[in-house]
Image (cartoon, rainbow, N blue to C red):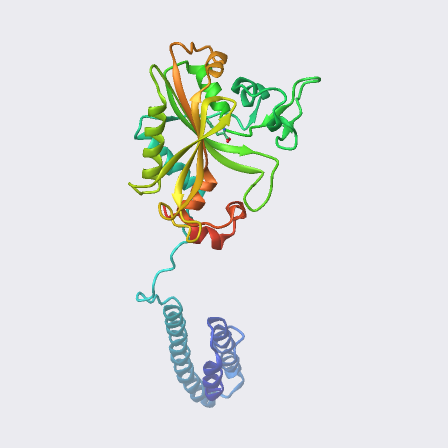
Length: 339
Ligand code: PHE
C-alpha cells in the first residue's frame, strides 16, 4: 500500500488529483481505513501487532500525503509567478493617437491668422435659401451658376415652397451676418460648400473660407494690405510675390483674383516664374450693402473667399484633392497633424 500510494502521489499534478489519492487512502472508504476495519477479524495477539504496524503506516502515509500536498501548492504558486511575470525592460505598448485632418488644421491656421487681425468666426447653414446664396449677393436669376448643372437643389418641405440649395459658396454668411448684426463687421466664415462637379481637382463637397469687413472709410488699400499679410503669414514667406488681377463676381465691385508666385516645375511656393490663383476678392457691391439694410454712402467693405483644400494642398504638398475625403489611414498618418 505504501509504494502504491507513493506512486499515485507522484502522478498527482493538481490539487484535485492529490485530493483523490488522499481520500482514496485515508478517507472513510479509503484503502487504509479498510485495512483498519478488518483488524477485528484477527486473533488478539495478531490484531495488536497488525494494529501497531497499520498505525505507523497511517502516520507515514499522512506525512507523505501532506508533503506532496505542499509541493503541489508550491508548484502552482511558482507557475503563477512565472506566468504573471512582468518584464519591466519591455517598451510599453503605446496607444494609437489620432491625427488632425489637414482640412481642420488649415481652418485652424487661417482662423488664427485672422483672429490676430480682430476677425471673428461666423457661421451659416449648409442648406441655404436661394436668396441668401444668390439673390442678395446680386446674382441675377439667369446666372449660369444657378443652373442645376452647377448647383444641388433641395426640394422644399412645404407644398409649392421654393427649393433651397446646398450652398455653392460661403458668401451667404456675409448676408446673414450683415442682416443679423449690421455694421461694423469683421468676420471670417469657414465651412462646407457644394457644387455638382467631380474630377481630380473638383469635389462635390469642398471647403471655403469667406471673409468680410464692413466699416466706415474702408478702401481697396485695406483689402490689399489684409490679404497680402494673410498670404505671407500663412505660407510663412515674408517676401511671397502676390498679384491682384481684375476679375468679376456679382457681389463685389471692383472684383479681383489674387495669385501667388510659384514654380510649376517644382511646386515651390514663392519661387519661379508662374502664378497660381488662391483667392477671390473685391469691394462689397453697393447693392449687396443695400440688400442688407446698410447705406453704401456711410459703409464700405471688402470681401474675399478662398478654397481651403487648395491652400492645404499647396502648403503641405498634397497632390490629389480626392484623397482628402477617402479616410485612408495611411494618408491620414502621413499628412495629418499631431495635436
Ligand atoms: N464666392 C466666391 C467663389 O466662390 C469667392 C469670393 C468671395 C469672391 C468673396 C469675392 C468675394 O468663387
